[in-house]
Length: 214
Image (cartoon, rainbow, N blue to C red; front, side):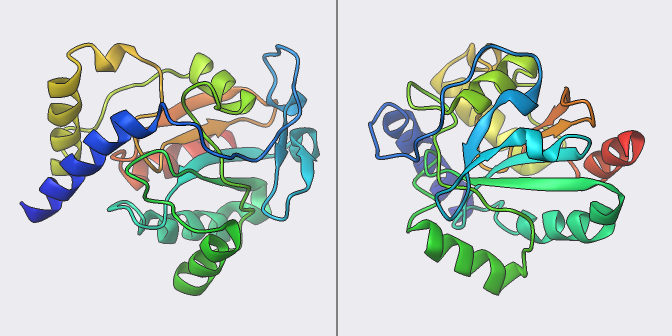
């Protein structure tokens, strides 16, 4: 119950924080495209990276946070990376502080936490916004290709999130925005969005989807 109360507070805080301006990593403007390889992003050391560098790879793009109830999913992500990287999987980690301010600190502090606590070795990018006016173009495109698909309400956390968001906005499910930390997008080897997984999606479903396109 205490954990749910904390989650409720974070959701309420998120509704206010998403509209606030924060200093974000700058990314190059891109033209409209149906191919992820046309986008540029900024990595954790501040360098601009073209996603064309990942052409031919299967990508799992995820917005993360270090102080969230879903933070242990870092361990699951690292296990996926260790299992499938040699077969062509890349995981792109985008820390985001929009949801309950659960990704505080500098990118250096976040990176040290992730590598020290979960032994992560997959690429970690600069902190970004995924919703609102400051959302990077990549995430605007991802949401247009794979809108919100609903929480897994067989998971108590999913049922709670659904109820909490619906209480705030009865039409919340019609909005394609990212709802919470650890939302994942799976991209095939041609740069197309295959599917979107909400943070409550079971890891087995992600594994099955990855194996299907490797």
